[in-house]
Length: 90
Image (cartoon, helix red, strand yellow):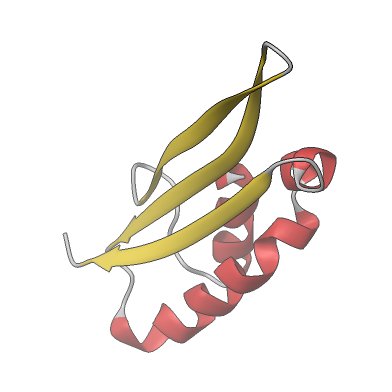
């Protein structure tokens, strides 16, 4: 998912490479019929160095990237996936 968002940002001339876009993910696993099942995944993106006047474009890219992401399209119907985008000036 990070690669898809990075590509969407780069298409909007927002630097995502070289550590500008990073992500952390965590998930919830539950037991169903004695089988471990991933139920939820939360992805937190951090985008550093994005100029203030480009942040709305970055937010729009974030809002729409999942629909273009192979991972999300493959497992999004089975696992609840949520994402957030945070900005930092460094």
